[in-house]
Length: 195
Image (tube, rainbow, N blue to C red; front, top):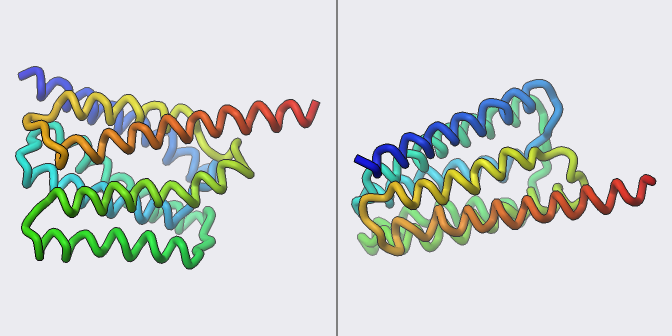
């Protein structure tokens, strides 16, 4: 029963995090990198499927819901003409994300897919990290903080612990933490420079 409670808390945090983020995109206050969000949506949803395959149970649900909402963010970011710059590196990340599906199919091992997806998702942070370095005020720290907490809680909600079920949310939590640090440092530096 407590696994379901953790899962519901993680789902609630997911929705709570996305609602103001989506509203900020629609108002033009933030401009997420579209291709990062496409990659994150794909990798997150495929990771959800792999977690289900490895009996992740209720702990996989927040990842699945997050994947669907992430794809929606990519769509509205594209429609609202957010950061649409797409580089050769972005295409590489996209191809890596797609490649996890045939590897999973050929090996019948969801861990192979999770390894590829986790690496790809972390690489997908690349465009956002680059953008955040130069424009740290165009991202919401609270959004990534909620996802840091959400990923930790979703690990507690897992019904089966294995590398397949824990790797993706664990590394994404670490990536969110790292991005938060970058945003805080760059904001402090830029505020100091303006003084």
